[in-house]
Length: 206
Ligand code: FNR
Picture 1 (spheres, rainbow, N blue to C red):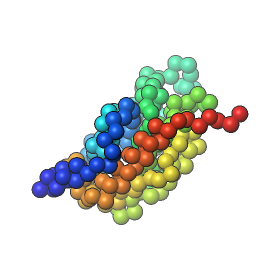
Picture 2 (cartoon, rainbow, N blue to C red):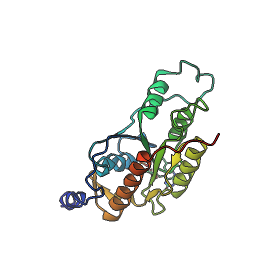
Picture 3 (spheres, helix red, strand yellow):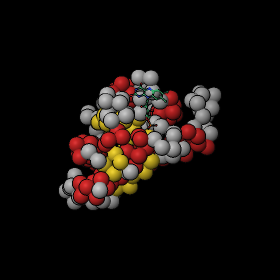
Picture 4 (cartoon, rainbow, N blue to C red):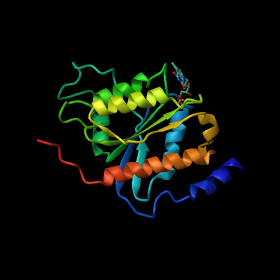
C-alpha cells in the first residue's frame, strides 16, 4: 500500500525532462547494514534526471585513519580509489547521521583524505548537497551544520540549502518515500545540485 502510494509520488516531475550527462558520488556517514541514512541516500537515485549516474561510494570504512605519514605520492589503495572516485564525480552528496552532536568520524575521516594534497585535492570546488538523517525529531541538525562547515574548510562548495530528515523511520519505508514533503525537499536539493554542477566554473581571483 505504502509502496504503491509512493510509486505514484515518484511520478512527480522534479526535473523538466532534461537529459543530463553527470556523475554524482554519494558519501554515507553510517557503515551499519540497516542504516537509515544509507536507505534514504539510495532512494535519491530516483530523484536525479535521466542521464545522471549516481552511486554510493561503499569504501569509506576501508579508509585508514588519516595519517600524514601515509599521505605520500603512493597512498594506501583504498585512499587512491576514493580520491579517484571523488575526482571523477561532477558533484557529491554527503549524507550524515548524528553521533553525539556531530558527524560520525568515518565521514570526517573521508573528507580529510579528500581534502589533500592541499591545492590539488579531489574535493576542491566540488558542489555538495548535504543532508542529515535521524530517527529523532531534530533531523541531526548539528551534524548537518558541522558537515557544511567542514566541507567548506576542505575547499568544497556545499549548496546554500541543505536538508534535514527527522523521524526518518516515518519518511522512508522499505526504500520508498512515505512522506511527500521529504521526497519533494530532496528532489529540490538534487535539482539544485545538478544546476550547480552544470554552471560554468567561476575562475579564482589571482
Ligand atoms: C547516536 N544517535 C544520535 N542521534 C541524534 O539525533 N543525535 C545524536 O547526537 C546521536 N548520537 C548518537 C551517538 C552514537 C554513538 C550512536 C550509535 C547513535 C542515534 C542515531 O541517530 C541513530 O542510531 C541512527 O539510526 C544512526 O544512523 P543510521 O545508522 O541509521 O544511518
